[in-house]
Amino acid sequence: MAKILMLYGSIDGQTKKICLEIERCLREGGDDVVSGDVIFFSKTLKDYDKIILASSIRYGKHHPKILSLIEEDSEFLNKIKSVFISVNLVARKPEKRTKETNPYVSKFFRRSSWSPNLIGIFAGALDYSRYSFWDKYMIKLIMIITKGPVFSNLPIEYTDWDQVRDFAEEIKKL
Image (cartoon, rainbow, N blue to C red; front, side):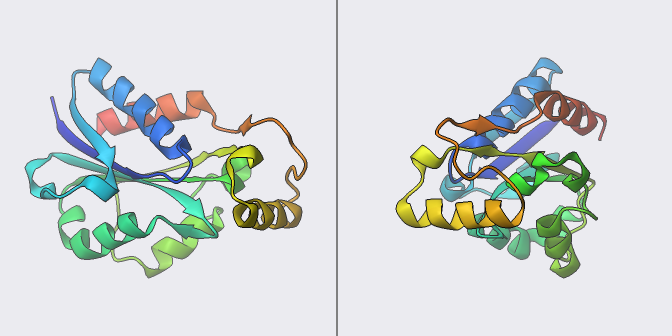
């Protein structure tokens, strides 16, 4: 039984939702999982056997608190079993779900000294009704560029939950 810390930086809640499903799967397998929003984390990483860091993307950047944690603790993260999860709308296209093909993840790892054991890239959700005027405008602009939906009145969840559960199985094998 592994003692696992899972921290997430979630803006609109989909990254948290994905992490909660991974946590459920890991607990079913007997692992001891502590999870929470990175904003409230004030302890040390050194008390855990595995570390999972998950981040949403907003305006092409991963969550700033997750990035700070990685920068501060990359040496330690490279010594233990560690996992990185990126949740972004580009990953709604299956061919954009690898470290090499997802522009946000490939850019991040070109600059990072951290080399996690596993990287998971999941599609997020799109709900224009929840966004501020400015966020709605910017996200619609990104959707135009990436040929995504611009005029949806209903939330669209792109997350492939089978992919999430399969990834949890990979984490168990670490």
